[in-house]
Every structure is written in structure tokens, then in C-alpha cells.
Length: 275
Length: 259
Image (cartoon, rainbow over all chains, first blue to last red; front, side, top):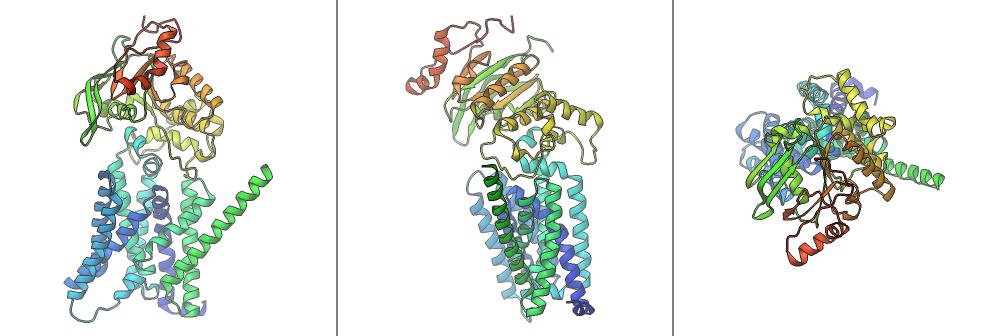
């Protein structure tokens, strides 16, 4: 791994993993405690429509992905909050429609479709330096907004109705949250791919919330775990010549499983000592 | 504050969801130092009544006012204690942070907590006997302790009326008595409206009882006879069986707060 760092693509890959884990740890925690994993998956998949649009009209697919994921975020957020029934069905349909638009637009695009697969399955080894700046920008945005809105996010997540009665502008705060999810998802797309984004977004935060009851600490644990998972996953994929995105996800998932076992064992010892 | 002016007034209020009317011609005045318990069957509109007062559900007809203002403008005078039927014990928040939610809505995102604000949080926690557990995660508390924290959160906003939704639903028997004892003490200064299906317990603590089943049967009456309490106990059953409105009231103590 060390000797691999002499290559720029390897240094960029490592850096991309670290940059992603910052936004991912913060937003993943908010996704997990708000129980909006499903919407976040929908936002990620719908972003594919924007990638297709980028190919079709000949502009940067990443910009298309940002546009589509923001649109999907606002749309799905509104459906979740305003529809009294079947919100999950409508969101599921929007999820698939976004992907379908992307696939059809790519069908309609003539010529060679370079690195199309990297958007779906990630290609952390092919992250250009310019993309690292975009990642840094997303990190700064996510950290700043979360620092400013920490109490509003916490209040809304704990009890939306009470927060509304207490004067928190819940609709605005919720819209800001889903838009942050959208940009975070696009940023992660290069690392693990749109299809697997949801696992890297939620697993570190899910582990964090097993071991702390303090939202700041959960976010911190999730950031550190995200960095570890992407680095270890990258190393394993480099050593065994495996797809990096999928390897990172499997490393995360195995860790989550182990964390659940540890937590379960701990609880059993606690109940047996008190009994 | 004038003792003869209602804090909350509902005047011929109708409300509901989609095609169904849940509240029908509700009239209710909540006066200073009232302690009103509203009982009734599930689906009888008790929760909807709270939503309408809190401005969370618009009325179809009629008027709701809080100290003369609309619910949206006036609800900062209310201390709302919600019911948490599906509580997430893993949620990462501590007791102090829960109570601080009462202040989050009125401050800008650039606001830093002032000393006065911190003291008012601590006063509220102290008032309900929870100051010692301020840094505990809320999920580690018992049902009764959590209820005290939610009451502290309501108190921290200096409310004129406390609104409680099934305050003893997830509490054991001893916890219930101590929560009601606390509410009785708070009632020396603050009016209280609580809704519950637990008729047995509330009628011995509240000053007046109303009964809700689409319509509200409440007469702010001052008399108390054992028959009336008995009637209150059977009220929801009778309402379902016959749909006949009848008078329900109970005053456990002989002194009248409004005399």
C-alpha cells in the first residue's frame, strides 16, 4: 500500500476516501436518526437521470447528477411530508423514474460512453484532482450548515411536531437537510457508486449510534469509521484486484455485523451481572 | 392577566381530515388556573382537539384564539407535552438538550445560549426534580422521568397553559401518582388541559372533567356529587351506546378556583 502511494491516482483515491467520510459521517447520522434511509437511496438513484442528461446534451454528468439529485430531494421530501398515505410508493416510483430517464437518455446518446460504469459502481482509483476540490467544497458546506443548524436539526429529528409548535421552521430545515443529502450523495458517487452510496452513508452512523447517545459523538465516530472503511477497502481492492466501491461496502458491512455482535454481547453481560 | 379572560377559547369549532369531521361544534374556554381533564374513547377527537389548539390543524368552521391571537401567533404561550407512543431509546440526545428544544425555535441560527437561557433550563429541570440527570441520555430514563423532562421542556418556555397528551400512558402506577402530584403543584400558577383515556386516575386530580366523543361535553360546573363522578366514569361507554349527550363534571375539591 505504501509503495502504491507514489502514484497520483492512489494518493487521490486515499484523499477522496477521507474527504467523503467527513460529509458522510455528518449527513449519515442525520439520515439514520431521522429514519430517511429510503429517501436517501431514492435521491442517489434518481441522480442517474442527471448523468444521462449530461451525456445526452454533452455537459459534465456530475453537474447533471447534482441537478437531478437536488430535484429528487426536494420532490421526495415534499411527498414524504405532504402525502398522508403511500408516500413510500410514490418515492419508490420517483426513484425508478430517475434511473429510467438516465438509461434512456444514454441509449439515445451516440458514440462511446466513457466511464459510465464508474458513476454506478464507483471508481475511487479514477478520481481526478478537480473532483477532490468539489469534495472539499461539499465538506465545508456540510460542516458549516450543520454547525449553524445543529439545534434545529436535533429538535426536528427528535420530534418534528414539537419543534414546529416551538417555532422551528421545520419545512425549511427539512428541505435544507434533503438538499445536503443530495450533494453528499453525488460527492460519494465517485467513491462507491450511486447504487451502493446508501450503505456507506448509513453504516458508519449506524455503528456510531450503537455506542453513543450524543449526536456530536455519533457524527465523529461515523467520520472516523468512514475514513477507516474507505482506506481499508481501498487497500483490500488494490491487493486483490477487486472493484474498490464494492470492497469498501463489504468492509463496512462486515464491520457493522461485528459491531452488532459486540453490542449484543455487551448487553448480555450487563443483564447477567445485574440479574 | 385578567382572571375573567379565557386563555384559550374555542367557539363553535369544526375540524377534521379529508372527508371526515372529527370535531363537531366544540365550545371551550380555558380560564387561568383551570385544571381540565378531557376523557373519551380512542378516536373520539381528543388528539385532534390539541392539534387545533396548537395550530397544527386548521379549523373548518369556528374560531380558536389563544389570549386573543390565532393559534400560530399565540402558541408560544402554551406548554405542549406530547405523547411518545413509539419512543426511540437509541436517539442520541440528553435531558438538557431535550429541554433546550423549547428555546431553539425563537433563536436565530447564529444565536449562542445566554446565561439567562441556561438558567431558565436549569430552573425548569429543578422544578420537576430532574436537574441531577441533566446530562443523561433521554433513552436511559424511566417513563416517569422522561415525562418530567417533557414537562420541564414545556415549563422552560414560561407557558400560561400546559397542554398534555396522555401524560401517564407509558408510566407505572407510582410514577403516575407522582406526575399528577407535580401537575397539581404546577396548577397553583398555570392552567392545565390534559387529555387521557385513563378516566379513573385523572378524575381524582383534575378540577373539572370534560368528555369528548366528536362533541365535547364540558360545563365547567362547580358542583360535585358522587353520582356525577360516577357518571363521568361511565360517560364514554354511554356515549357510544346511546349517543345521548349528558352533563359530565367533577370537582374533587370543594373550593372553587374561579369564585
